Length: 359
Image (cartoon, rainbow, N blue to C red; front, side, top):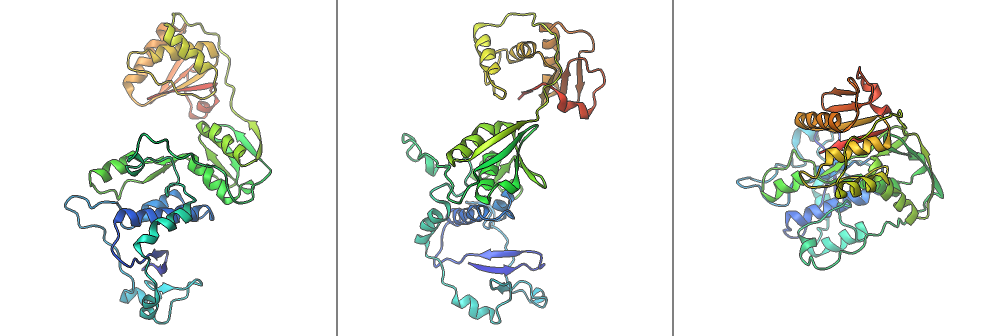
């Protein structure tokens, strides 16, 4: 690998030279593995680094010419010590051509062993991932992923449960922090869809990360609590959870309907958990089931929808199946709040007892 200072001088490029032609897919797998390996050891790389690989895609877009890459050793930038290959101390090599001649190119057959060494038998992307190669023998059970981390781990950590799951950064070694961030990351289906159709993917992130970075904490979506605790348990880390969630305001409300047997089973299953997903076919009656959940939990509720039609449907169902008074339901864009909120204000959105999201 060779390090080159960019033309602007504000960054750098890492070059990997091969002894023979290799496929773009293999080169990208190697680059992805190197980034994942680096993320285990430094906090300076973000998931967006996976989008800075050249070539940008595994296959050539139809009618395309590949990726334009700014070659090193350009005359004008060199006058400012840019566009040059540098050593570990970021000093330019006196003879650039002699340095390039001294590089030992990587044989193509070394790519897979290096990927294995860098990733510890994990997928190079190190997020939930299924590729065509993984499905060559779909009847075989995939190898179980180990969450055991090699570096020394802390004996215990503190977790704050609020609108997100908060972990204190200073308590987390880099490999553990990296793995927690990846629990909230997944591959972007639009990237792989475009790539399969040989369309450009320059404007589509390969990985979507849902973790949020704060000065002293890392925040994960609350749905990541169970896998996060499992990760800590597998590494022998004790934890204490401080619950800072809003309990909302109690409301007295009755469900004026009768659920079918399948709806009743779904409602009872959902009430056993703080976080859950009700996946049911069209015409199951998910809105009616949600109305029953609101009545049984008995707290003010925030409902999120992504279409105006769904907002109107929820409002009509709630007025039909719950004994509501005028003004008990408030709406703002595609948010609906229930109960007794005549004037909606953003700061009140997070003081709800529960949230229902309909997609």
